Image (cartoon, rainbow, N blue to C red; front, top):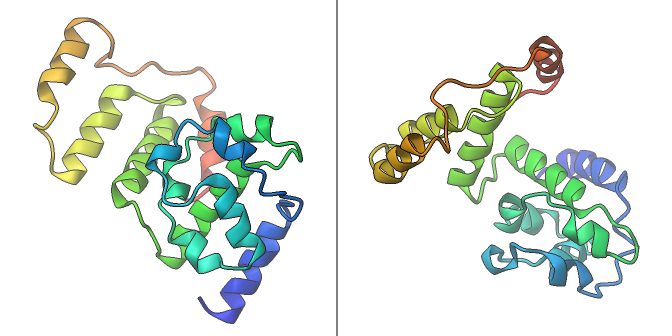
Length: 174
């Protein structure tokens, strides 16, 4: 990362105060996704405190976090770890460091579906993702079972307030 990119990143991340992190691991103990992470939530906070930004951006953990807020609720200091993960993901995309390309593509397709319909269309999401990744027939049996049991709809549900959601997305590049 260039010095200017690091400076911009530090300004963005400084808005979220992770410096109070005690590294008590309470966030990690409450996280349902730790088994999939290379750096655990408390370890990521430590990387940021040490200003190891590139290492944090290369982390698989920022792509695995589902933003459930279990860590924030458990944290005695009230650190908003999912917000920090969002900033790290955005910065990783900006500088072209994407550790988990499949997860990134899934996120992207989900946001596109949300932008189009105001809520996520599962069928459209899966179809777009599988087509983009070239794994169209990989889970077709499961998909057909979900369709026949009406767990997934072919036609997306639409919100009345779609225009507001589209206006929101106009301000947020995908």
